[in-house]
Structures are given as structure tokens and as C-alpha cells.
Length: 471
Ligand code: G6P
Image 1: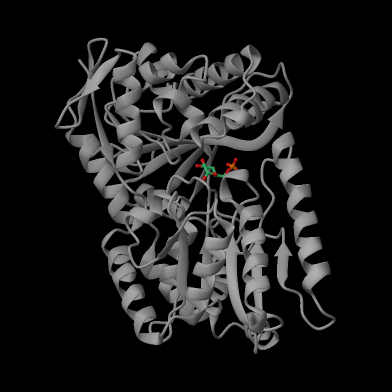
Image 2: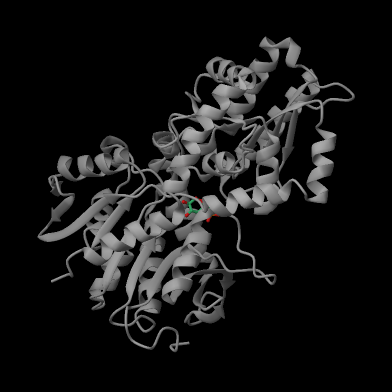
């Protein structure tokens, strides 16, 4: 295991995240720009990726991660017990931090056991990582599941460069204040050398949280001092593998299964939505808006459909189960009331699709509906744009509350809380002239090429490597 990159020179990259993107038996990675980018970076530099194995272990059994090699990357996979999973993943991470960071304080269900489980698993990750990493490795921790990991590593004597990137939004100060241990979380971030956010708003919210609690201040050069510890902050909007997605979309037009789909939807304009089944994605609001759109545009009836692809997610959490039921009922009522024998207005599936199929479906759709209520970045928006046919591109209708809205100026921006406005924007998108579609699309496409996921990765690591070493 330890032979990876052992020839000296630059240190390895060590990535730690809750979920690890392991290639399947055909060598393909799960979809998602982050998995692809982190894999590419690891391959280039040689490295280690540590995270949860996806497996549950018996409560008392001693844990040391299982090591596995694939594509020149070493994976360290830690099993979690049922209690760990319940308190850390389904508990503090996804029933406290996820809702609060997405401004759904009403859905937060804090309790001390969940908090303890979160810290316990972070300690367990730190203990597992200590014997695996080497002096010159650069450690990059990903996302809200692992905020305290840097501090836990430092307390065990780790003096490496350690960076942290938050993939989800950082909330405003008065929202964060609802988390009983918010001050500990803020302080924990000061043990990293570099803390990265998706957008300026996220960084500003973070700075506001620090200053309101008199914990520290963000300086002009984006350095920060908290209780005598200096660290850097930065904004690094994540991208996709634009070139790869583009070529996948071209390939997809020749795929047999997709050609069938193209034939079956011929004569209908298609709008597409692709989201994990999550309350932050605004899926139910989108279906209501689509109904308004059909109600107001009778010429669209039997000639337009919404393809809503929605893989189930975090199904053990009551809010997710309730949403699952609510969306299924909503889709049923729209299809029952408006549908005809030969036309189903909302095609709803809970299946997940590979990148080739998705790219083909994005290219088929005249309109991409990406309308989250709040979202760190949203890579579906970027994938939809990258997949379009340059000679006849579709239109992206994008929530103003997605991080992606800052970079995709050619999108039709909407407020997802306003169903009539989303309906009007959807109609505008379907009606848009080919010239306007091309203009809007090429501006977005250029920005996606200039800011792809490799640049995101290199940009973060360059800043991390330039950061001062901990004293
Ligand atoms: C978001 C989070 C990721 C997470 C993903 C899927 O994008 O930022 O950290 O992995 O959702 O959620 P899951 O709970 O299935 O890992």
C-alpha cells in the first residue's frame, strides 16, 4: 500500500470525504464532477482517498480501514457501525448541518447523541488516517461531514498542510446560530491552512459568523485569525469536466437506447430536471410551476413534457420520506388531471442514470429546469449547458439561489418560490429565438471551459501549497 508515490519528490495528495467514488467493475466512476476531478488529481500526483466504505460493521469490532488499489489510487475504506451511521451521517450531518446550511431550520433535529456521534466518527477518521499519511502529503478534507477532522488531526500531531472545501452553502449568521455547537464548528475550521467556499456569499456569511461572535475577522487578503491561529480562506467555484461531457453528449446521439427515447418524444418539447430527491432542490415547487405553465399555455398541452429524473437519497430520514410521498402524489395528480391516453405531462423516475445517458437526455431537452431553493453550486446546470448541440442549443432556466447562478449569466434566472414567474420563464425559454439561444449558450459555454473542474482542483491545491505551514 505504502509504495504509492514512494519515490520522494512532491508529497501525495490525500483526500478525505464521507463518500468515496470507487470505480465499479467496468472501471467507471459514479457520475458527478467532483468524483471525476478528485480521481484525476489523485492519479496525476499519486495518492490516497479515505472515506466511508458504504458498509456497516458490528458495534464492537475494531476498525482499521480496508485498503484497496484502483487506477493507481489507494483507497482507505472505513466501515461504520449502525450507531455511527445513525448519529453521524443520518444524524448530525444530514438532520442538522444539511438542513441548517440550506436555511431549513424548521427541519433541523439537533440532539446531543447526534452531536457526539459526529465528533466520534471524526475522531475515528483522524485515528485511521494518522498511520496512513506521510510527512510531505497534502491533506484535503471535503464537505460538512468532516468539519472537525482538521482539528482532530492536529491534536494527534499532524503537521501537514490540510485544506478544507465546503461543497454546500455557508448560512447567514443568525441561521447558523440555531446549531448549539456552532462556535465549536467555526473554531474547528481555524485548524486548517485553507478553507474554501463555493461563492463570495458563502465566504461573506462565514466572515460575518466569525465577527458577530468576536471569534475573528476576515482580512482583505482573505487571511483570518481565530484564537491566535492564522488560516486562509478563498472562493473556489467547482466545475465539471466540460470537454468530457461535451464529447459524451455527442456520442450519446448515436446510442441505440437514446435514439429510441428521441423517437418516442418526437413531436413533444421536453423540459428536463435532474436532482437527488432532496428538499433543497425545489422539485415539488418545480412541478407546481410546470402545471401553471401548462394551465396558462393551452397550446403546449399534449406537445410538451417534463422529464424529472430523481434518484432517491437519504431515505432513512423522515423529511426525505415525506418529500418522496409528496412528490409522487403531486406528479400523480398533475398527470391524472391533465394527462390524456396518449400524453403524460410529467415523466417521473427515481432511477439514476450514467453520464452517457444523462448527457444524451440533456441534449434532447429544449429547456433545462434547475430550480433549487438553495444550492452550493449545482453541477446539473453546468452539465446541461455542456451537453447542448452548438447549432441548436437549449435554454437553461436557473434558480437565483444556486451557486451556479453567479457564473452562468446566459441562463434565464428565476425565483423558485414564485411558481407563476417560473412558468412564465419556462414559456419564454421554449419560445426563445435560435439567435438568442446561441448567444446565451456560447457565453455560458466559454465560462465552463475556462472554469472546469481541473482548474478548480489546481486552483485550490496551489493556494493550499502556498499557505504558510502551521507553527
Ligand atoms: C451533496 C454533498 C455531498 C454528498 C452528495 C450526495 O452534493 O455536498 O457531500 O456526497 O450530496 O449525498 P449522499 O448523502 O448520498 O452522500
